[in-house]
Image (cartoon, rainbow over all chains, first blue to last red; front, side):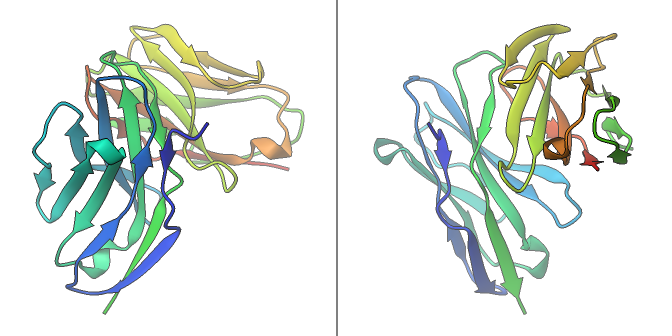
Length: 116
Length: 111
């Protein structure tokens, strides 16, 4: 069964606007970690931001923020003031439990295009 | 300087042959992983290692064998290569309960 689902295949926005990318996850664990990664056109995969399940406050890093809705098993990524260089594929991911070798499950990705 | 080195960057192999994908990390992490990315299954987990021990294996085929000769190395040996093995293979590492750092990947084409 798919543990992490991203239903938006691609999104196109104008530069300097705000975009939200959706992600829902499935887990039976009481403790889990949620991540967003970005894959650039060169193929590089870069960590962006993280939300720990026990934290109520939404994480924010630079112009990235999260909309964590635990009852809905949802972790949306919000990018404000988008720039051309934000164009990339964005992956949502989840790790269950407290062990550091636990698997990081990825969604299928959302391709973001930021147009001038 | 890259913190995770994957070699080679590109690899073309003949069906039925054997190849080894190299991964070295210089981040001091004790956990290392292999992921495969193809058009069919984006970022699919293959193996996880912690302190050079296999922790999880979700690759069905025994043709894929990870090898850890040193604590900061996790190579991937693939035998009897098939065209379906064509993909980009990413190595990653992480400290305790933290995010992964990915290498730049090895793009494998099996002809």
